[in-house]
Image (tube, rainbow, N blue to C red):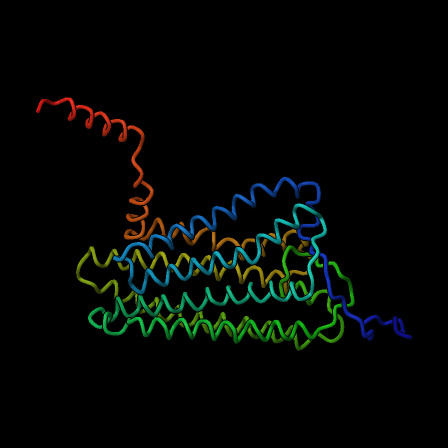
Length: 336
């Protein structure tokens, strides 16, 4: 401690931490391991099934379905960045993690979250061209354009995630080595940092506001024009299909943005909210998209749903196998 008793002037910083998520549920933590493991398996399996369906069916090798598969692949990566360490924390109360491990986890959390945002923008562009300029869709939405959109998504995600991680790495963590969270989120790490964190807080808030405001403005403008164009389609069937597809995308957008915004508001405004509630909100916005997105696209998207049904029903039922065997025996018993 310094001469004036201020610990923030120390040239000392913890290089390892203990993640303590949901501290108020100490007695119930072991009971949550199995349900959360089941949730993780379901997230990976459901997303993987839709991705496999898109990859395996040549009729689904179209920009909209490719973008859906990429979004679900990001969902798997995001869940994998969070769930294994989260489950480890439920097995034992104090979950150790190094500073480098914490920064790596924080990078993957925000990188995948931003990739979600960018892929939703790409989907909005795809639907805008398909519905507002249908005759030019094949000409405009080429594999080259998909590659450019993927490059833009990766670059933009890195451009936001990397500065946050670098800035966090330069902070000194001398308050405590205990992070009262199940994962290394930006705000959770700053809560144990020392010194003047005004710039860190303002940068994090500015990046969140700029990213979300810019994205929501583009998404709102795109889907407003898309819905307007859809209602002008003369064919009732085509109009219903266009609105149904846009409805699926809008459900995913609401799931991702509302869960993220509610968490940010609670973290920054509602100081009296308990740590367990903050942890719960973080778990919802980190894991809910991965759990709901494959259901939304797998159930609401007719083309994907039909192929999934074929895959799941590809193996004949025991009754069908018995009937087929009986038919073969009867054929063999026929004369000549």
